[in-house]
Structure formats: structure tokens, C-alpha cells
Image (cartoon, rainbow, N blue to C red; front, side):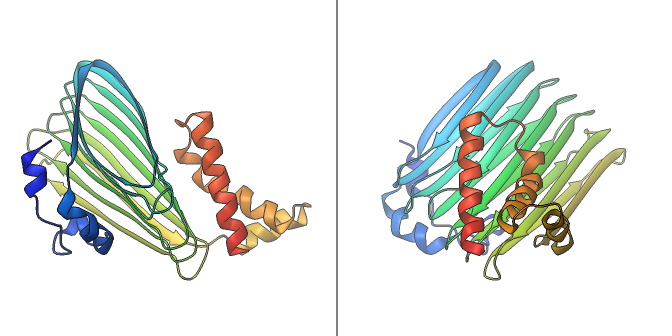
Length: 278
């Protein structure tokens, strides 16, 4: 048990990383905080984290990948109703290391997956994230990616599907150090709102101190395209089938790294949201 974790103050909205968080839910739990700690290090690590249950899952995971090594993994936040998750991953990819991560944030009343990732010279990161929520859920992915050496690449792609009064958030900061020349980085966020009460938040930030870089970001938030729905209906699909097909296609970019069980569970979640929104 970390004494520092026990003494950490409750976050406030003055902290940009917690601006859209469900602070009332945390306030009920914070006095009894006993954050778990886990450390993984080596040349090749496979991460397979599936968060379930209806309690508070509060964990800090430190991962150190050696030079030329690889990290592959899935983090699925699938807590039961009433569950609260505040998971924090601190990842270092040394020179020439490669990281591929798939995140799914879909369960509990409040789910927060925060990642701090640093890349050495020539390292590469591919991070795909899916946020799928309904009801009154608050689901967040927070990423800080730091390029510390030259020639590193990072690709962050996050998609959100939100119904009911759910709130989905991706806050992301990309920092490029003076030594990180020839950085190549992309941040991409798209959100699909199924109901008028759903909310999507995003704030991509670029902090660049090198002059030979290629960095880009993009964000869009909207609803299902009526023209696309009409086209599919004209080809014989029912309205329900058309909505499922378009929503599944919307998430296709971020589902490639998921295993069959996670994909099937996510499909079930999507179908339930669409039924409620119909």
C-alpha cells in the first residue's frame, strides 16, 4: 500500500485532467483510498487486463519496456453497474521499442483509464481506444504521450459511441522534447451521439519544442448519417440493422487488436444502446 496514495487529495476541476470527471462518485470513496501498485518490466510484455466487479478498482501500473522490446496489450474496463474505475498506466518505451495497445472503456458508473507514455529514440506507439456508454455513465480516457528522443512515432485513435445521458471524454496531450527531432505523431478522435442527452468532450494538446516534426490532430462529433441510413434501407436492411452496421463500421478503426470475447461483449453493448435509442 502506498502512503502517498492514501494522502493524495481529492482531485478538483481546476486540474484539467479531471475537468469532466465524476467527482461526486469519487468523493464518496476517496477517504478509504488504498491504491494498488503493480510493476512490469522486460523486453517483451503482453498486457491482458480485464476490469470487472461492482466495487472500486484503483490501480497504478508501471511498465518498462527495454530497448528494442515490445509491448502488446488490451485494457478492458467492463465493471458492473455501480462500479468505479480509476486506473493509471505509466509506460516507458526505451529506444527502438514498440507498443501496441487497445483500450475499451464501457462499464461501471464511472470509468477512467489514464496513461502516461514516454517514447525513446526510434520507439513507436499505436494506441486504439473505444468508449461505449449509455445511461448516466461517465467514461474517460486520458493520455499523455511524451516523445523524448528523435525519430519516434505515435498514433492515437479514439472512437466514442454514447447514448442516454452518458458522458465520454478523451483528453490527450502530446509533448515533444527539444531532442525529439523527426517526431511523427497523430491524434484522432470521433464521437457518435445516439441521443440528445449524450455528451462527448475532447481536448487535444500539442506541446512542441522541436522544429523538425510532423504532428497532427483531428476531432469530430456527430450523429448517424441519415443519408447513409436511407441508402442501407433502400438495399433491404431494416432500420435496426442499418444502425448496427453503421455503428460497428464507425468503431472498426479501433477494434482490430481486440480478442473475440471483448469484441463480442462490445457488440452486445452497442446493440443495447441502439435499442434504447430507437
